[in-house]
Image (cartoon, rainbow, N blue to C red; front, side, top):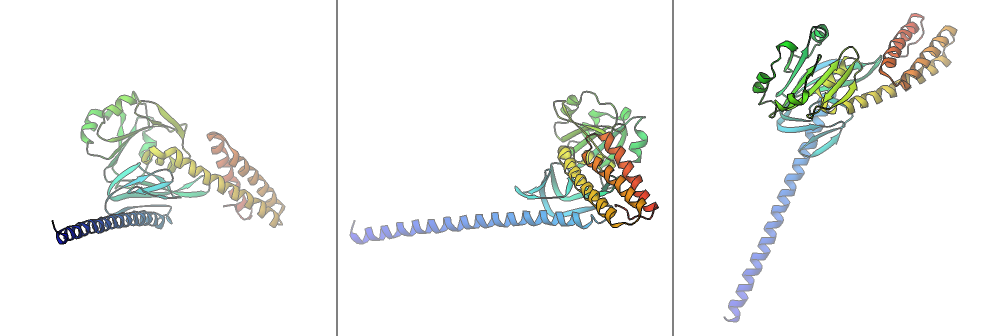
Length: 322
């Protein structure tokens, strides 16, 4: 082979290698850009969802269907919203399934008061989520009084009319199924086995004691409690992260209690009316006890006491605490 042929061969080899490197560069660049655009899209989607939720939180009670713009999966943890593995921290108190797939989210907000207004709670479901509230004769009247937006697939059913085998056949295509027992519950581990094709949650509620049991597939459970109906609704719509979100809500309750306690001190120094000073002293003591209360029963007793004391301030022409 002559020198000219060898030179041409090396030239072509160089061109092939250089061309391959350039091609690999552009493929990698395009892949990185796709990832960047995907991350940007996820961040914008989550930000838009938060904005839409906050926009209708000005109402004490409101509901709406929120469009995500396209079919995707959104994950909810205690303090994050995640899309396409891109997490964003949120301060909103959201009770929802751990994962929701679809183009639309069904959302509802309620203001939680105990005894004063604390925060809006958010309840989120997919169009493929279903909720059964199972009652008996003792719990019927209370369960019947629960009022939910009509777009949720939520049914109240008598325990005697519940057929789990039929239910398992009719719920195979659901994303989430929550069975909320306001009555007896037998062999929860066996119930889980009847629903292998759906994400099942089982919750038992004691309306007399305001207590909750959130069951696991092996039949064990996590015990908790609720303060007023909005927190109870959190266990219905989001049992998977219920305890953590409830604790976040309680932290806000503690913070506001401290604020109102300091407000009572401030108002007591400003008033010239001896009766008002006495009333502020009384309600501040109650607020301090309320902040440090370590039992559900004591919390309820002090909540009622604080409401009465706040009304007494108003009745005696003293500026109220809240």
